[in-house]
Amino acid sequence: MPAARRGHHPQERTALARQQPYFLVGSPRSGTTLLRLLLGHHPALTACEEFEFVAPFVKAAAPGWPCLDRYRRALPERFDVRLGNLLPLPTATTFPALAEALLWRLSRADDTRRIGATVHHDFEHLPRLWPDAQFVHLVRDPRDVTRSCAKMGWFGNAHGAVSMWRAAQRSWQRLAAAVPAERRLLVQFEALVADPVAELTRICTFLGIDFDPRMLEIEADTTYRRPDPRHCRSWRTSMSARDIRAVEAELGAELQAAGYQPSNLPPLRLTWLRRAHLRFDNRWGRIRAAQRRYGYLLWLGRVAANRLPWPGLRRYVQRRWDAITLRHLR
Image (cartoon, rainbow, N blue to C red):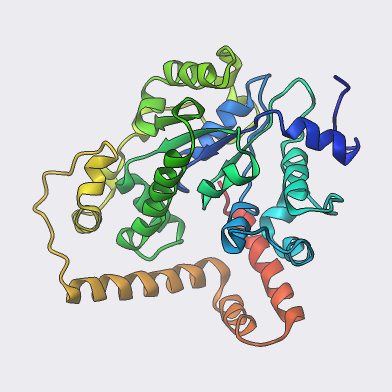
């Protein structure tokens, strides 16, 4: 097979992209960055970069395909597309062809490495584009996920972040109902950090390759450290009792269905008044977090840009916002 790198013909990239890609899926803050870095250090796999700009568009356009011209106009405005050096966009005459070309370009692979990507949102729609793809679902204790989301400032409190974890779980349930068992694998973050060699070996076997010790050498060229059991269930020591009880009350039986046991704290009853308070606290907390990170003037500028019909102002504010976001990414 001829070598296939970025400079090769789009049809050649498309043919290679159809050789059964794999996708790492799960909620944000569930440890997917750590796992994708571990996978990317295997000489037979690509870097498994984040690929969030396809599935939501497929979802919005279902049962058809997104309008290609509108999609091509929307992508340059996305932070992740610019960050992934995907501009100018590949040439393609259909949406599926463009999606495959983007996956190939993002993966930066050649014919010796298998293409893969990480997707956190709406990933149950990926089989429409890649019906033979394999899926690795990483799930983490929702108390750790929600605590981390609130710490990042994405939500004002842990209760508000339950929606993000729950959306990923339901996306996986829908995908699992449509994809044969032999093409999907469930991995718990807690098992990964407790015994990384065993779990990575299990993932490699699923992907049809052998485990390589170089997968654990992520400290040499990234800011991440090797899996550490101390990162497991940190909610026990760093999450308030109020937040734990609120998350557990919101999830109910979903917590145990995902393989996690409730704490020994007294159960919390979510009355309408308490829910209203939690929603207000979440909304206000997000506003305050954004103002601290981006500054009051830029935050105010973004509010105005989203309400005014001035595309130039919106682009200017978004670029400044993205630059600050990039400094806080980890």
